[in-house]
Amino acid sequence: MELCSIASGSSGNCICVGTQASHLLVDAGISGKRIETGLNSVGLKTSEMKAILITHEHIDHIAGLGVLARRYGLPIYGTQGTLDAIRMVKSVGRIDEDLLHPIVPGQEFQIGDMMVHPISISHDAADPVAYIMKTESKKIGVITDLGTYDDNLVEKLQNMDILLLEANHDVRMLQTGSYPYPLKQRILGDRGHLSNVLSGRLLGRLLHDRFRAVILGHLSKENNFAELAYETVRLEVSMGENPYKGDDFPIYVAKRQEVSQMFCA
Image (cartoon, rainbow, N blue to C red; front, top):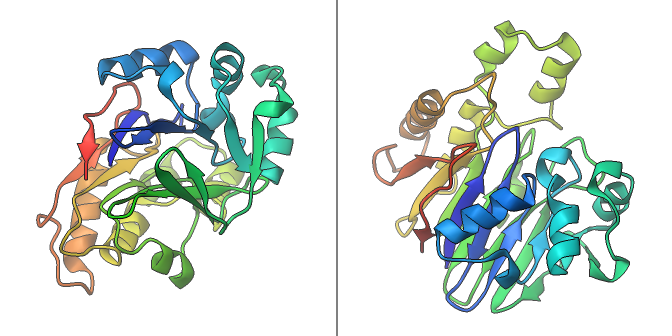
C-alpha cells in the first residue's frame, strides 16, 4: 500500500491512498487542477481514482469536489450527515445524486482491493469521520480534524503501517495569536483540532516495531510551522510511556502547497 499527500493544511486537503491495483482520494479540498497536477507528479491520473472519501463538509476538504464529480464521475463516499451538508454548500455546485454513497461509521466497505473502515471523530461538523484503508497485510490511516481522542480510537488505530496524523497547532502560538477569542476556543476544544502535543501523545500509543512512517498533516498556517510540529511530536514520543524514542522511526511533515513523496508500506 502507499500514501501521498497532494495537499495538507488548513487551506486545503487531499490525500491519495492506494495499492498497485487501485487508488482513491481522501478529501478534495483544493482545485481540481491542483489535484490533477499533483497526481500526475507521482504517475497517477484523477480519472484513475476509484472513489473520493470525504471526511466532513468543511470547505478545506471539499473545495474541488464538485469539479471532480462533474468532470470524472467519481463515486463519493461520506456519512449521511456529511453528504446532506455538502448539498447545502453552494460553491460545490450540483453533484449527480447517483455518485453519492452514504456510509456508516464502524461499517467497512470495499473500494477496489482495499477495505475502508470509517471511524467517528470529534469535530465541529455534521457527522465527521477519519478513514483506515487496509489490505490483508497492510494498513494506512488518514486521521485529521479531531479535537480529542479516547481509548476507543486508540484501539482502532493499532497496527498501522503508515499514518497521516493531524498536528494542527502549537497551543502557545494559538493563544497569543491574532485569532478572535471564540475561534481560539473552537480550535482548542474537544471538537476542534489536535495540537502538536496531543498528536505526539497519540502517536506514542500507536507505535510498534513494524511501523513505517508518520506524516504530520493539517498544520495551521498561522499557528504552527513544520519544524515546531516535528520537534514537539518527536519530544512527546520520547518522553511518553512507551518503549520508543522520537528518532526510532521516520517523521515527515506534509506541506500545504507541495506534493509529498509516495510513502510505501
